[in-house]
Amino acid sequence: MKQPKIRPFMLMLGLFLFAGCSSIMKGVTTPLPLETLRVTTDPARDYYPSWSPDGNWIAFTSDRSGNGDVWVMDQNGGHLQQLTTDVAYDGFPVWSPDGKKIAFYSTRRGNYDIWIMDRDGSNQKALTTDSGLDLHPSWSPDGKKIAFLSDRSGKNALWVMESDGTQQTLLTSGQGGIWTTSWSPDGRWIVFESGSGPGTLLKEYNDPQFAFFQSPYHGQLWMFDLKQETLNPLTTGTAHDWYPSWSPDGNWVAFVSDRSGNLDLWMMKRNGKELVQLTMDKASDALPSWSPDEKKIVFVSNRSGNLDIWVTRLTP
Image 1: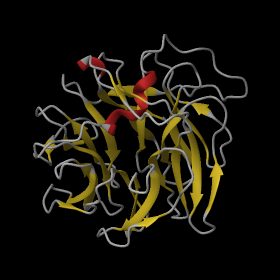
Image 2 (image 1 turned 90 degrees about the vertical axis):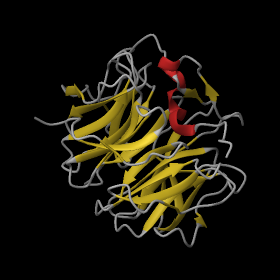
Image 3 (image 1 turned 180 degrees about the horizontal axis):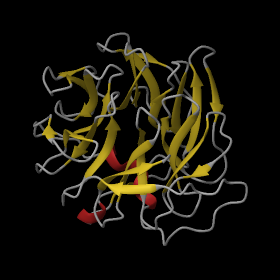
Image 4 (image 1 turned 60 degrees about the vertical axis):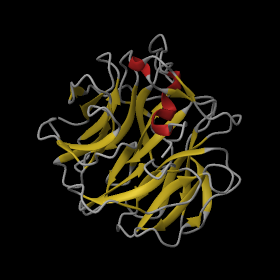
């Protein structure tokens, strides 16, 4: 079956080749003195890391098999296991809260759909079969629902469904293009990125070392209150903010931003205050995912000259 031409799996890395970091903005907390370690060293591209609920494993996407597939490894990069082997693209793995399931998106039906499988890669099945693009699944804390993004309504919007794929419901409308979601640990909030740019979504860089995508969207972070059904902005201004990730205690949101003049990891309180810059490497850092104990964040960087997975320690 013919595969889709659009590849959303590196959406936010269009501002990839900045000259370097600028000075820290006024009012921003000084960067933490963090220890950062490289976890993967394969010449292939490794990205979309997701920490398991028990803290022992990291699921990720890699093309080391010659195709985009879902893999898992221990937190030190060992005990590699390939979970998907389909010729289609499988990406963006996210663990269920009990660690028994992994949701991901796949093009194996000729379109981007949300799929689910057991932790060992067995029992793979599609949860969505709409003709639109369904992307970026995010589990509710109780594991009963999955939020995701879809353009089936005419533009990228926030949707939610039961974890078996039933009761697919539109949550937002009228926003700009929406990309990436993260469900708060208390189950009340979903933070997501929304853009307000023109309609051309993606442009691919052909250089295999920098096979990323750029978006004209001016991305900002928003929170959707599931109880009140209201939207609240988390970030404002001219910076591009992407890929939010809730801390396990629900007090912080890690995200990617170019507000320093480079693509770096940041975090802020859940009310959008107390911004802290986490990385300042001249390379691009993206796609953060917290460890369950909140002591580490796994992320993707090209600081080695290749797309690899790194871990930064937030506390001693």
